Amino acid sequence: MPRYKRTEFDEEETSSMASMAVDAPMVANPTSGFSRTDGTQVRYSPGRKRNLWERASPMEKLLIITALILLLLVIILSCVLNSYSGQTVKVVHISATNESTTIVTGNATGYCVTPACVTVAAAILNAMDQTMDPCKDFYQYSCGGWIRANPLPDGKSIWGTFGKLWQENQIIMKNVLGK
Image (cartoon, rainbow, N blue to C red; front, side):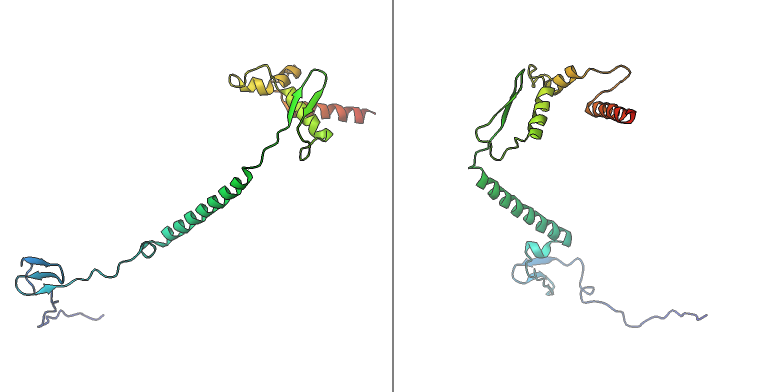
């Protein structure tokens, strides 16, 4: 195993700054930096000023690009929506009466008036309780008609449209298999 010897160097390695007195007063010189009263000068250069993009980290650059893309997307979507704002929206008014369902429209083009659509719309209107104020009890307003038409069966703690469909399917399968 080699042994290391400690050597003493005759020359001491120093920098030019280490040879200056630390407590020497410094005077500001706006053109060339600071100068000491002992005649030595410390020069500094502010360097080239960097803009925002050069100072940004890679993550900040990614976030800036993402924000610009989202801003561009918002501008494009607002232009598209603005182009459609001049068009009027056509609404189908469906009113339920005791005898039948009446569809009242200004122009039936573009609306679903097939028997399936009319049946579903009628079912939705029949499930509503239009005598209730939706601001006071929205659940009763939207589901009151269905609750009245479909009381909770004996032995069931919950009852809904899926339970009703399951029961109807069970009856159909029982009739088909019983034949």
